[in-house]
Length: 283
Image 1 (cartoon, rainbow, N blue to C red):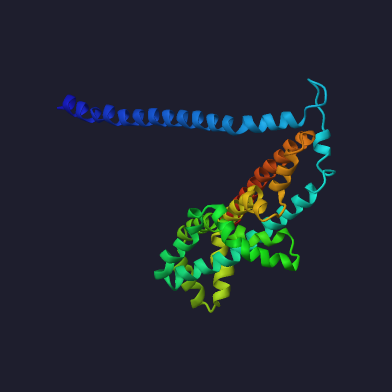
Image 2: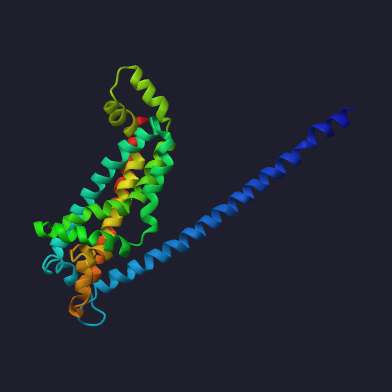
């Protein structure tokens, strides 16, 4: 009986060890797949950037390197003003998108959920409209606005429309991750106004989603070309296109493009760092 008992007690050991070994092997294969995938995509994005940096550093003689293309960014006609206008457009567009979407989405989630599908459809609609069609529809309006000598900052209304789908998806994910109803009811039971509920209770809990929406909106503004070119406004991409027509300034073209990409990457790191610090602070 003792032998039978000992055999019965030791029998389940191989059965428990086998699934554990299978899990370890599956985890190793998954990690290997991740490393290979990230390496391939990293090379796919890094090699063109490396080629741009190398070309921007090439000197007049073969095999030499120079920073002249980078130092000419400030002296290239119209480039600095285009960069300033693009950055201002990014800030204004982000502010308008957040002011329009954040209170509206919170109010819909709390009070009028039946209209959420219609609101989602309206926000995602710009994805189905090509930029050229959007410009054709808005060009008569902008032709009238041009009589008031408004600068290229007038483009922010179009950029707000283009950024709606991306900002909406990001903010919607942030709202779904928290219990908006419970937070609002708790705050209201303590005497908080609706403005306090939105600004001091719900918004801090969806801060990461707001940062993601700002990043997507800024990236869209930094890379937009079609609408600005058709409406005869000069932003960063239009200025780079004008520089590309002059073969003598090819180095400036690549140096400025590289700087724009590095700025977007730095912005991504800053927003990610800020969101991580806020999460740690709340913890």
